[in-house]
Length: 152
Length: 410
Image (cartoon, rainbow over all chains, first blue to last red):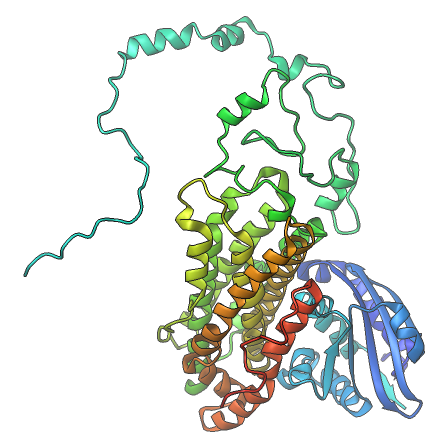
């Protein structure tokens, strides 16, 4: 029986990924611990630009919350990954189709040239946390393969 | 053929061995002396030494009653530092060779005697100041280095390796050959420094050891990968160490003599600049890797290089904030960068034996090299921009004098 569809983007969608991460400690221990405050920004959704702040610590995602534009800086993210809704949709659909991102849809590939996705932040040494812990973040987003995702 | 004329060495090296060995005493005399040695007599008497009889509090024993508990990650440096009386090294002159911040010096050993027991130069007492060695959040980064090391037996499935078309295999093999050279270079240049760092800076010593392990583990894995998928090792890349080797030699003074050696210049050259370049190369290669197995290797390399860069930035940042003369320190580091940036651009970043394989991987075939090179060209500004953004962050702004071209010169 398949799970009920979860809409992307939504707090609930990211919470499902967090729950899957937190339930698979051994898998994430294999990658190494994560210490990061990350913002996923999806621009151009039917509801406008949406930001989701996630806090990773140890082998878990401890917090997911939607942030208004003005709340992103106070959230104090290490890095922000942002792109158009269409790019995110394509990535999520690709992960679902292949069980994980194919070579053209990994986070690193999509961010490589600063578009269609871009990783950035106030302090490059904190942005580098994204690269230092890349296995974990890719595995986290690949968890969406197990979700039934619906799009607005 | 005439033999080459010998040129006198410019270095006056101290003798490493006596010209004539001292005569040894007869074996019976040595045995007799050892039999009557006070320690041998004490062991025969069944008495335990002072280490066991000294009071646990107030005597020679250092600490007692500690119960470090694992934190969210496990039994980490952070966990033991939480219960330690000395969670961070200080600038208190650390004397004895084996003496770390955790262990008391015996009361009967005077500072003069300590000096004789462990001479400063050429030993692990040589770099014993925080500004020379320490970094912020050393424990966390060191644990990350240990935790994120690849475990080949668990994480790599060699049976999943995918055969590639010859042009892509050849490109990957050449790129791997470059990486192996680059990482052996880093390993050889930074390795000798660890023995000069005081044991009080245990976390930094561990990090540097893990960094050496990263380089050597990855070199071995890449060579295995190259030899296991139908290809083979590629051609040598000349000039990869351009500027780097000179800076390391100048900074170490050949590890000879009682002189102040410039560890910061070496860290800047290897961890901040060279690893920044390798990080960007690894990102490109990860994006161009066509098989899951190769992508896995390149993702690991991205993580490793980014961590080495993080160490370098923290080290240089700490140095600039805590050294005696910040202005002079910044001038010296700028000179290192002035020397390295153009040479590394020419011999590393523009090296066809590095860029062309990348372009083939990114293009997806030998026929699509031009498309791959277009990706490299669009990516190029990030080499300089990310490096400069890191320097901004650590307080060594050089946007007005950086010699890495902002746009691709091709």
